[in-house]
Length: 573
Image 1: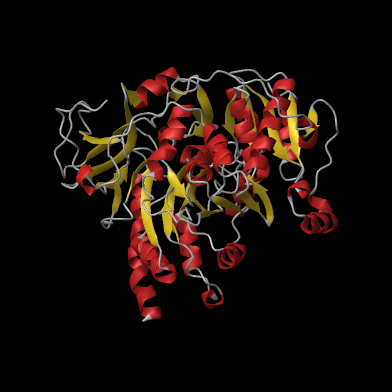
Image 2: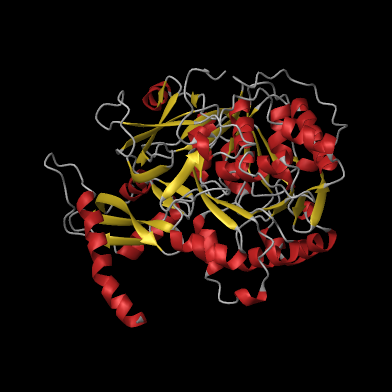
């Protein structure tokens, strides 16, 4: 309960009258979102997946059959079940089916390499994995049936998820992309798993302590670890974000779901929020610019959460006059800083309100957001969501809170903050101090409670809304026998925002060329992690104690950009 003698925070006055800044943790299981939506509006469309419509009632029934099938496979409370799936009906059914069976969802990025999938399975102790019957996915997962805890793969047929005509066309023209896994107890078709009455055995859930999700993040080091998010963390963060929508369309909302549900931002702000407000989720399996524009034009979504690179790509499309994008009313940008130019261009194009939010995996993920009803201050990541407290701590004395306007580390307290990292007590203690989460980001508060970020304490590249960790790329480069030293930094990228660039010193007498190292990276890193450029150097800068230093390289790249700017302006003048 709120202490009546404690004054409200400086951002409280920015809230509209119908939204209370003080929100306590919600003690419900996450699957209550689907149960309640199906109870209130069973015949409304829950999901539009490439023109195949699934109502809330049918999605609930499919979820219940998934839960029952998992229990028949022996899944019990606390077991970990992996989802290596793009947006599709399978993702929603599997996600909530796993939770109803009492287990914990473990999200996998389908772009992961075989080694990354194996490592995450081993770390989380995953016993069952859902994936698609595609050659680009299934073999990477199947390789982990040997040597890990994985014992079953639930193989989901992509053609079965499509409308009849599209399903037939896919099977005819894309048959070369379809994997043919054996049908046995280790490789179970989704249709077999769900061949039951849906009479699963309810499992008692303590929303405040039971873990709903393992969401992997590199934290401050790039070493993957699972943030443990409780049922209450996720459902409360969904309600916090829901408070930002103060003018629901009485005829119903629809959300364009192009961000992948396995990304924590989309999981909460697209999938869970969609269920909370009983919106139609218009889901696309991946981002293809022309398909996104056509979908907005034809299906008229009202909400469109995305990363800045997507808004920028749309605004710069050469044939925008072919598309009507004015159905979009609200957009939340997350995953990376939102350039003011992109915000203004997209708002002018659509007439919508595009606001920048801020969050991190450890906070389920949303912490702050600019209000659609109030000021969007340039450079600000907004004000804290209901129930969320933000302080700025001294960089040298983390026990001291600095005054308004002074720079320091951003720390967060709220009902959406994780329970900790799975199996990583020391790392948990590094970031959780009581109920406060150290974000590793540097910024300040203004007198109105708006938060501004100015720097990052952690070494991470924000690449198209995804965290890419230089250490992962450096470790991959060091596996090449010709590489003696390697340093990776972020450089600006017109589409992704930031992208990796690697600087490499070769071993004596080594003959590797940049293109050889690039090919090596293609084999050992996923597409997001592959450097945009690899530059060979005779020497790499080091600190006084001999540690490789990035500071000089960052400054060199910045100087190159400054020198190139007048030439670019001259060419375009």
